[in-house]
Amino acid sequence: MPPSILLRRVLTEVVAAALTPLMLVLLPLLPLTAVTVAEIDRLRARACGAPSSRLRPAHQSWTTWCRARVRTSGLWRTDLPIFLTALLLGLLSLLVVFFGFIGALALVTSPVLWAFGVAAQVGPFTPTSFGQSLAAVPAGAGLALVTAALLVGFSKVRDAALLGFSSRHDLDLQAQLKEVRNSRASLTEAFEQERRRIERDLHDGAQQDLVAVVLSLGLLESAASSGADKDRIQALALRSQDQAERALRRLRDTVRGIHPPELSDLGLVAAIREVASRSPLDVEVVAEDTDDSSLSSPSAGAVYFAVSEALTNVAKHAGVDHVRLELYCTQDGVRARVIDTGIGGVELGKGTGTGLLGLRERMRSIGGDIRVTSPPGSGTTVKITAPAEPQW
Image 1 (cartoon, helix red, strand yellow):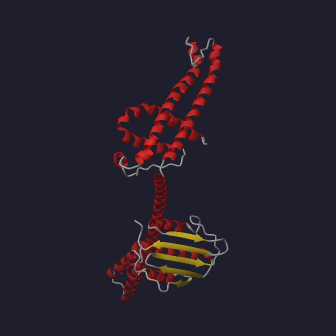
Image 2 (spheres, helix red, strand yellow):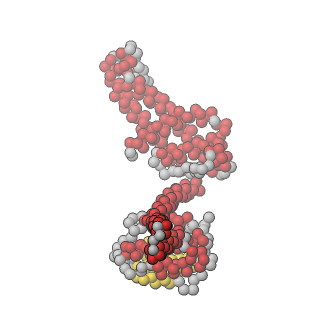
Image 3 (tube, one colour):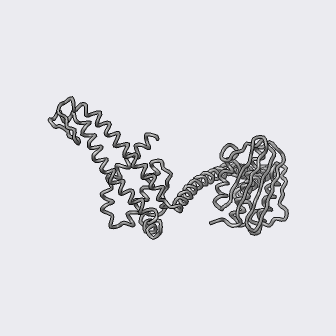
């Protein structure tokens, strides 16, 4: 066990010992006290490296959460047993801290006390000479270590009791909360990457073209005011028009990357065929006799961008010219597969799988998923599933 965890366990037991009298005072408010102590104990266990997470949502105040918690069966099934265990162990820790550390301190400082004419008595031991007071120093250090070891043991007993008394519902809720936190972090990172991509596309594309338009219009104005010949004015006007049209095309491409109009106007199947037609690959689309009318906008959008990212990865990294795209839509949802015979070896979150990783979190947020099968040298298959309606 790392020294930092051992230190946390000792310190949290000392704090628990100090707060035990307060727990006794608050016994008349037992339901609220039990809920509060149990939640604090979950936080303590997590700080000490135990598999535990808080139940209180981060956005909810302690008062609101405690009032709601005391009206559930979790109070009697989980929180009250944890509170009683914490109270018992707190009393034991209080005794151990008081007699152990106070005794250790008296033994360690015994030579100093002897110099002032005080014989430090610890239990049956009382030094009768300066030599005995010196010999008490290592004994005090040993007592401190034994006390710390007992407190670490009490801390582990708390962890065992917390896990033992926690209901299956609470454990499942903690696991779901952990998954939600991880998904939220992944989605935040994915959104940040998308924001940077849009910013980069605008800066390197349409913005540069618009700057060129402004400069061309300035030259056009200068030429017109100086009485330049008609051919020069016409050439500057045509160049400005070309630059404006190029900026408009780049803006349309950027907007299409955010949300393609084909998806809203024609549906998922048509949008998938459109993105396949724009791909540099020879994309074989298999989407016969499939109806996407029951798909909601979040599900269709998530599948569209996942397929688009998978095709982009094939074009960049697979080393092949042909890819097979299968799309099946039903009343319950949609399934898609992007299959290539390239070099394989793709792992989500590593190298070429980073874009799909963020999209997988987006897919999971609506109840779908993305799975990648990619043995080295045997091609890659990206399987995409999504429900017709998000599971919100």
